[in-house]
Every structure is written in C-alpha cells, then in structure tokens.
Image 1 (cartoon, rainbow over the protein chains, first blue to last red):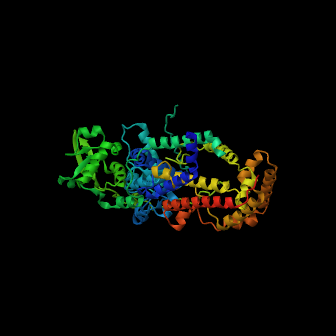
Image 2 (image 1 turned 180 degrees about the vertical axis):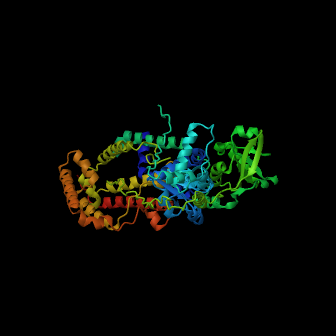
Image 3 (image 1 turned 90 degrees about the vertical axis):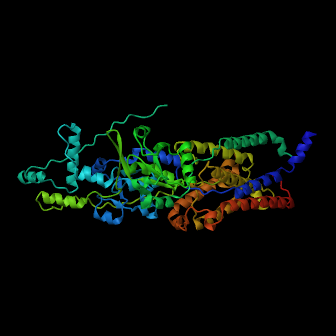
Length: 219
Length: 203
Length: 196
C-alpha cells in the first residue's frame, strides 16, 4: 500500500522538482539585498594595518636607489606642486585624490614592482596604503617617516657621538655616502678631491647585511 | 517506472546533497563588521583635512577621547575621561558596542595614540565601517618624569626645503655645484598586462 | 571565502589534482546519463529524445542558483569567478561548425571521448576528425587569427551588458528552462518513437 502511494506521489516528481527550482530562483529575487563592498574583511585589514611590516626604512630605500634596484617603484602621494619641488629620484607622482583612478591602478595592482608610498611624513602614505590594502594589492610599502625622515637620516645625517657603538658609525658612513650620491657636498670631501686628485676615489661599496630571520614553520 | 528501480542510487545522492546543504547552513556565520562605504568614499573621507583636530577640542566635554595605545601606556597616564581601546582590539565586540553607543548618542570621539601616524590605521578601518563621528587627535604623547606630556604636532608639514639644503651645502663647500646630482636616467615603467591565457572549458 | 584556489585556501598545485577528480566525475555522469550514445545525443535534433537539453539545462540552472545563493551567504565571491572572454565572430563561426558536427556525428567533443572510453568505433572516427580539424586550424592559424583574436568584447556577462538584475534574470531563465522542458516533452510524445 505504501509503495503504491509512493508511486502516486512520485508521478509528480518532475513537477515538484520544477516548482522547487522556480521557488529557489524566486527566493533569490526576494532576498533582502545588502550592498556588497569590495575588499578583504575589516578584521584582516586591521591586523595588516597594525603591523609595522609595511614600513621600509629610509636606509633601505637609499640603498635601493643608489644601487638602482629595478624592482622598486616609488610613488609620491603629495600634490604635484610639492612633487615638482622635490621628490625622490625616479618617483612617480600619484596625488592622494587620484589614487583610485584607472591610470594609477595599473601601477598599484601588479606584482612586478615593490611599490613604496611616501609623503612628507607617513600620515598620507599610510592612508594610501590602507585603501590599497583593502583592495588586496600586493607588494605595497610605506616609507617610514616620509621625506622629513629622509632628510634627517639620509640628506643630513647626524654624526654619531664618540661613545656610540660601531655600527652607528658604519651607518653614518653609509648615510653620508648616500647623501653625496643625492647631491649634498661636504666641505672635507672637496678638499680631499683637490689635494689627492690622482688617487682613484674609493668606491663605496655598501653591502647590506641581511637580517637574520629565524626560519618559520613547523607542522 | 523504470528509473524507480534505481531508487537506491537516487535516494543516496539526494540524502547526500541535502546533508551538504544542511551542513553548509549550520556552519554559516553571519559576517561581522562589514564595510559600509566603498573605497572611493573612504578615500574622500580620509582626504578631508578636518579629520585631525587639535587638543583644544577636548575642552568640549561631550567629546569622548579614546586611547588606542597599549595597556601599559594607558595605565601610566591618559587624557582625562579617555576610554581605553587597544589598536589591535578596536573590532572586538565590547569595543564595537562602545563605539555604537557613542554613535547612537550623537557624540564625537577622538582617537589618540603615541603619535598621529599610529592612529591612522585603526581610524581608517573604523570610518570604512561607517563610524563617521570619529576624529584623530593631532598630538604626540610622551612621558616626562612619569607625567604624560601631550603636545600638538603638525601633520604632513615639510620640515625643510631639501633642494635648497643641497644647494646650500654646495655653497658652504665653496665650489660651484657641479651638476653631479646623479640624474639616473628616467625609468620607463611598463606594466605588463596579465595574459588572457586562462583555463578554458567546454563539454 | 571561496573561490578556494585564488584565495589561497588550497595551494595552487592542487589545481591539476582537483581537475582530474572533477574530470572523472564528469565523465562518469556523462556515461551514466547515456551520453556516450550518439543516437541519444542526436535525438534532440530529431525530436525523439531530449535528455541532452534537459541534463545541460538542469545543470546550468542548479549551478547558477547555487552559486548565487553561495555568493549571497558569502561562501563564494562571485566577482572573482572566471568569465569566459567573448569573441563575437569566433563564437558565431565556431558555434556553427560545432553544431554541424554535432548533428552529423552525434557527439560533442566531450562526449566523444566518453564514447571512445567505452569502445565505440564511430566515436573513434569522430575523434580522428577532431584531430584533423585541430591540425588544419593550427596550420592555417595565421589565416584564422583575425577572427580568432578579433571582435573581442571582454569578459562580459549577459546581465552586465543588458544591465539587468542578475536575480531577475535567473528567475526568468528558470521559468524559460522549465517551459522548454514541458515543450520538449510534448514534442517527444508527438514524434514517432525510435528505438536505439
């Protein structure tokens, strides 16, 4: 008996399935719509934004510029007036309001270059970084301290005091050499040049020590 | 009813697919803390110069200061009436509740940290979630003899005219500025478009 | 959450493994729905068997409704899914050639391989024909290239280019599909039964 009833009900199985499909599709139309926003989740964005991983130091950038590292792409997010006054060598100018233009997208949404944002300090550059991080762009960094820190550390480095550790002097030597590369002239270097003209100027080869990083992993 | 003889296979498949749907629905969690604005409007809001305010604004007692520094710094000293909300924890349930309450009361909240640069990250995340009653306090906090020192700072202000300094250095050295400003050749940046070579399908 | 591989939930290297598993499942379902029989496949053109229409239409409906529900609930990001690029004349001419081949041979490329697997001789000939076609195409590639690469309209979808809500589109598509099923059943009853 049960079997016969089952068969009777199953005679309408295709109709039932068809109705089911239409109901499901109709449900999609009736569902309350909420506007979707692009980007990684806010929790992820926050944890990315809190971490200082995005910062690159001025020394790092100077080293890369001096060695003409082809993989970095410096982006000045200040307005074009300030950009024309002074900017890092080979920097591109994408003023912050134009960050989301299609033209800028080609530079941000790619994986060939390490993009470095900078502004006078890192306030505006951080804004640009957060927006691009939400959109999920990879390889984007911020110059720590911006151009102000660039001036303080690279263009006009302060001489370390006598009692400072040796690597402070080493760093100072590198910074001084870098500042000369960027056009700063020191009185003592001029004298040296005029007296020891014959001498081949010593090449400053700065070998960046790799930071030791403990291997991560585990199972 | 020839197909009905294969009921076993059909019913097994049906049970499995229904199970799958049920598991998916059970494991469903409503996403929390969604963005309410697009990146475009977020950028516009961030561009507003008024997002950073001076410390004088705290004379207005309806404004709620929020301290985003670490617990340690907060306990050492904080601006009067400040609520503590560590930067990494601003999205926790309690903190969101506090923010919602402030917003519901139509009050304004100002975030402050050790310096304004540290605040921009949590601030930008929060305004993208629709908390448009927030501001950043333009202050730098430091301790002097265990006393919290709060001082106003300027943002995005160039401290010195760098090209002038470079020229000046040449003058100091008493030489004509040789044009040795290693002008690296202008880099032509070409971004390769990703190839359209993607997996193709068909039957 | 999804799609799984672009979001790095599954490492990229699993791509091929998953492809093989899906391929086996696809082949199994094709074979068990009787699609390795050329007469069954050609039936849709002569009106005595509409299994092809029903199976493919149902599959499309189920997956489109499923994907949109999953997108709504946040399991899959719809905007990240791959959309097939649209080359207008390439699609038209290619579609016509494939249609002629389908009526004449009784297989589409996928099902022909399925039929080869169960040892059908007509399918083997059909696959050889495919190979010859591939050979001709690659030999004369420079001649065909303007059509193959031209008239490119981007990775567009119907709802984007017509600017209608995808949800309404799915509803109409579903109703249309079910009407098509009902009509095809009526046609099949009218046409003289063919035994194969």
